[in-house]
Image (cartoon, rainbow, N blue to C red; front, side):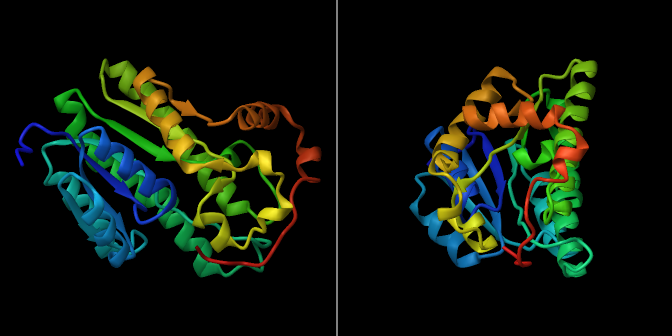
Length: 260
């Protein structure tokens, strides 16, 4: 297979959910792939199914050696055209009783890993004047809720970080694109592992990962910096931007801590 001129996408959290769907859809669009996640068996199984060249990197991005391996893969790939920072997890429970290690790991993954991998990618993309970075955020970025303090805060950072990068790239005259993808409830392992009972959430609020990724990729073509899939979540995000802090105090209920 001649891959010399084909673009490459690196996807973190590629072993399931939104990350896996990104892998399948980008492969269908002709991208070779670098798949990064903790579960090596799942990565290898996915890579074996895809009709493109796929490299698997089993790495925990909260650990220095895992993050350094992903950074090096970016720097070693002159054909890298797209970075998808998708890896993430959630917890439920009031901040002061939640496991501190889990809170630290969340900030390492959602903030430090995203920052370092984006820095490595843009360091090569900007001089070439092509490429893109998609940072998977959440509609939680637009508000705060009880039991999700660190999750909401790290996703708000992801949005602010992405918008700041867009301002810099635009000011520099660069054609490189950045996007913050902000999904809501998704039919994937994420909420199952978190312990969310789907029966307690109205059916119309659940979205398929396939639809979310399609909206992201269409938004990237248009140059949209913030992409919120689903009409209900577009309305919800607009509402949360203007809701009073007093009302936010009434939203959300704490649950049990659980690492994804």
